[in-house]
Image 1 (cartoon, rainbow, N blue to C red):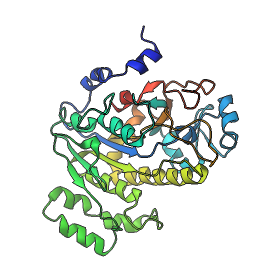
Image 2: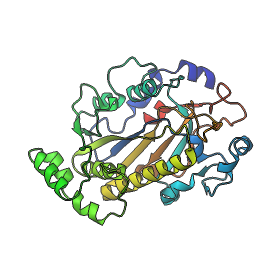
Image 3: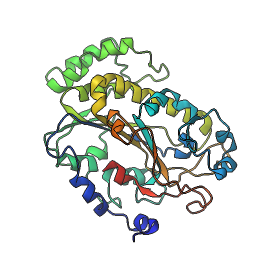
Image 4: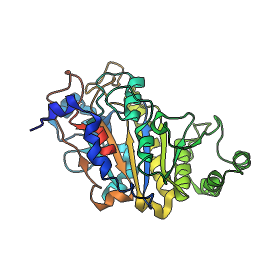
Length: 344
């Protein structure tokens, strides 16, 4: 019998092959959508979905344990800043996977993100797992949204790229500029059509961001997915909370909540056929440091959302909880599941 330890040490892409054979999109693009959100910087899963039922957590982080947390199942509770997403959890359109990690066991952002996006066991591949998946669904169109080309969708399969201008706010003259720039691209022009009207109706504008906000990027992804695109990817930065984590993480989770809700609103009825996965390159230390933050760790958290979850995996905290009495290298949450299994 394969033990948890032997699986985590051995790891390997071979574990993904049976999952790849069962991809529901393999025969044809169909009507299902997939959105991948990379949370860059190492999100602290212990603070996002808090194991308040674990006595060791109450000792390690008494302030978080006593916070106005949102109960999920009696053992786990969501960070209060995720309150806007609580209805999705009740409607079985939101789930979490705790104590997950890639095979990477060091603590470099660059190496960790590369391995996460490549989908291998080391930093040795030149393409991303999401681009390789397109080989199985050659008719599916994918879009990479962001200020740079992500490794996740890099590869031999064609991918549409959209880069927002640094200080474009997607209002007024900016819309006219973008519409003129992409007038000869039917896919992009259709995706941009109507965003100005939706933006004017939205109250989720972040006035502190002079550029394109995360919610606007998510809304644009929804517009693409409402047309011919079936796969979209973008990133949300800023999860490296070495100091003042209480304030900084709340802001990040507020951004994430607004992004998920903007995506759902933009997708409309297509949300029922959508799966969203948000994950980070690694977790963070179980103990707070002297600056009120956390340092780079190992076991982390994956966030799943979308109408497709309502078919069975929604409204749950998935994964095998290891407890906090025994930490990985006496500092981190012990990973018990390979994140790639859930991505697969």
